Every structure is written in C-alpha cells, then in structure tokens.
Length: 340
Ligand SMILES: Cc1ncc(COP(=O)(O)O)c(C=O)c1O
Image (cartoon, rainbow, N blue to C red):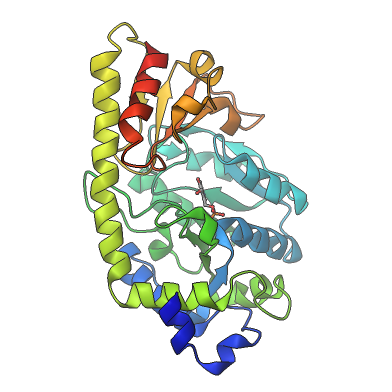
C-alpha cells in the first residue's frame, strides 16, 4: 500500500472511473483468465466494495431491465437474499442435493429472470454443481435470455484437485461473475469485482452513479500490484496448504475424539474455509459465540435456510480460517469438547 501511494499517477488522487482503476481491472482480467478460466477483458470488470456491493449493483440493474424474480439456493447467505428482496425482487428457492442446485426446476418457473448460484463450492453445504448441471444452467440461461449470478466466494480453495474453473467460462454472455478478496485476503479490505457481459456493463455501472465511491485508489492499486507481481498467487498457494491442514485436523479431531457422537457427519468437498457438521444443531448453536471459540465461526445451519426450504438437513457451519495459529489448538479443543 505504501508503494501504491508513492507510485500512483496523479489522476488516481481524483475521482475514479465508476468501473474502477484500469490497473486493477487489467490485472484481474489476466488473473481470472489464468486462475479461474474466465473469458473476459478489463472493460467487462467492475470493481466493487466486496461481493455485497456487487450483488446490490446487479440486483438494481436486473430490476431496471425488467427482471422481477431471482431464484436462490435453498441454503445461502441471508444477507444476499435481503439485498435481492430490498431491490424489489422475489427470491424463490431451488432445492440442493449432492450434485448442487436442482437446475431442472428452473424450467418450471416461467417468471425467473436470473438465478444466484455458488457453483464451485456451495455455501454453506460445500458441494459442487455437477458438470451436467453446469452445462444445463448455461443452456437454460441461453434459452430464456436469463442471467446466472455466479458467486465465486472461495473458488481458489480446493484441496483435493486443481480448482474447477468458473461457470462464467462456459457462457460469458449469460453469467455475471462475483469475486471477492474477503476469503483470499480479508473481508475488511472491502475489495471485490464483477465480471459483466457486454450487454449489461452499462446498466450495472450506472447503478454506481458518476464515480467509484466505495473502493479507495490505494486498495485498488495495491491489489493490482499484488496480483501482477505474482505475490497474490503465492499467497493463495500458501493459504491453500494451511487451510487444507486445518480442515484435515478439524476432521481428525472430530472423528477420533468424539466417538460417542456417531451422528456427527462432515459434509462437503475438501474445499473452502468452512465445514458443515450435520446433526449437532441444537447442542452447538446454544453455545455458539462463547469466548472459548477463539474466533472459530460456529453458526446453526438454520441461519442460512430459505423460509421455503423443505430440506430436513440440520447441523452447524464451522468457519475455521480466523483463529490465529496459537489459538487454533484451543479452538479445536473447545469445538470437540462441545460435541463430546
Ligand atoms: C457465500 C459468500 N459469498 C460472498 C462472500 C463475500 O462477501 P463480501 O465480498 O461482501 O465480503 C462470502 C463471505 O465471505 C460468502 O460466504
């Protein structure tokens, strides 16, 4: 950040293009093409204050183009549902199973103008969208002139194989891709990006007003340099191996140290910064938030459930990224203690 300030061009100190700094958009276009298989150019990228602001821009842009309904997965972030609802959109739920969202259900809803998905790693269940369904949803969007909003919140963090490419690569004219630095770096940075098809760039950017209001130029230029220097890739590789280890330790601790809890099952792919533990819902949620958690994020699955979901899945979602290395063993002990 110090280097970004000291080498910034003079115009960076003024109001910035509403798309965001061109240095960051060009760096992101190269990175997303290389690392996530996107098909994009800098002109299709809109810098935003995290995926949260990105979705707000997309929601009001969709309303402006006549969309009234956006399907969402039956488990997901309530804040995202709230953003869509506040924009005036109805948010019917689509069911989830081991292959991700039930894409075949979309054809039965003639009023849908878009669908919000977490295809690489469903949040919070942790499954991936089956390859047949990836193709099917792009086909649905193409046939219906609809938009897929792809939330790629932790796509880089796959531990058992090379990460699956983003859905956007299969249908760049039908997908609005949302990316974020919240999981790769830190939520407090508030840096995110949209990749928008040509025909929607203008309407999405118009939602911002005249200038980029939310992401300061220091963050944008520092992020651009971080990516272009190769340091971002190195950081992702380092964190991937650390999170893989944490996830393995967490699973090992639960399976070996809670033999009296045969009901506890770990759901989802070896990926991401969360695991879903099914069954112990009431037990753990009653104790969530205790200081002993040492920054483990423990939330009841119910928090993420769509009001119309008919799923009987129960459990808790455990985010394991935040504890410091010194707090990690204690956090694991606290979690195991509660499950015992
Ligand atoms: C499913 C999902 N999408 C997106 C995000 C990121 O949102 P933001 O970029 O606004 O911090 C998160 C949280 O980190 C998330 O869990």
